[in-house]
Length: 295
Ligand code: SIN
Image (cartoon, rainbow, N blue to C red; front, side, top):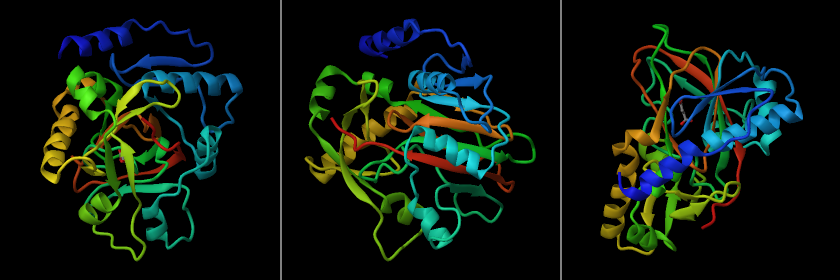
């Protein structure tokens, strides 16, 4: 890692944080992720619980709650505390618009041809206003008691990895994020109405923390608008590989039944591992609509 990346890491490690009073926050890696205990998500959160969870979420980007036996309504109510619920195009297609559309079912069985989220990505970055928060509740883990971990990457630090000339080059560039890339290309859905496809800055600023983020991902980003196709492919490959080649930017969450993980979709990427075939894993994801990403 170069000096600037080390400085960013040092700043994060030595960051002074106000103590938490009503929750316990235990980091799972020095650079991303924390477990939160002392809260029951089946109940309405007090304002102080909400504020502290929000603060821990902004600080650690990924927060893990264990043993939360929440039902659909409680899951959605938790999401609504943070904003408007996102409706996923695939859930509309799969349910034909009937039944549960404010939660995305995340399911893999022996019959699955793919699993959701296998590969580094930011959820639904093809939307004009991609989700700011995803809350995945896994109720069933593979019956050997392990498998299906999810990896998360810190995209603030991915930005900090870049040299000054590369940062300057990327500032002002925009990229297309295309839902057809995963949903048709990888999963095979061909709906009558095209999937969302939008242009976002390559470097964005987090609306709450004000910090800069590298905002391209292998799942959804098709090309950088201002470059030739060949230049774009090479630059994107280099940027995607920062996440793939830098394990220090990541944490790995091991699921236990009834774990809920909430991540900041603006400044993370994640990758679901499919290492449990032919076993099954099941859960539901609630996402909260965010703002249009801005430079
Ligand atoms: C996803 O939201 O991409 C799925 C993540 C997972 O199943 O762990």
